[in-house]
Amino acid sequence: FKLQSVTAQLETLQQQTKGEQGKHWEELKKLKDSESFLLEEVDRLTQDLNEKTIDLHTVTSNATNMETALRNENNTASTMVSTLKDELEKRLKDIMNLREERDTLQ
Image 1 (tube, rainbow, N blue to C red):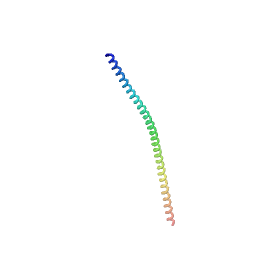
Image 2: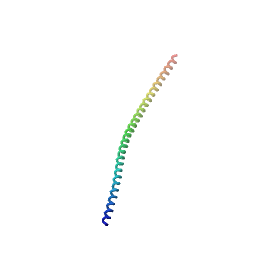
Image 3: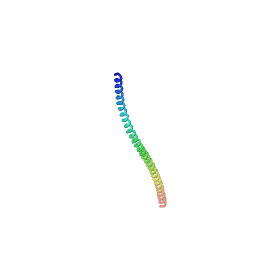
Image 4: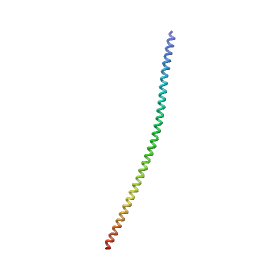
């Protein structure tokens, strides 16, 4: 009778162990599924980050190029203004000299 009792207890423990083991396997499967989903999400986010980084570098490069072009245009405009100013001053001086000559001839 004692052997039957121990055998029954052993079978009960084995069934409980199987039940617990089944729960653990189910939990492990859920964790693996979650891990797979999270890894895919990490890959997607990494790809998005890389694309946005490339876009940022492109925009930064374009902004730098535009800034350089604007500086060059500004320098060119300043040079033109300076040249025109010098030319106008020279012509004004020539006109003043011609007036002086005219006034002395009268």
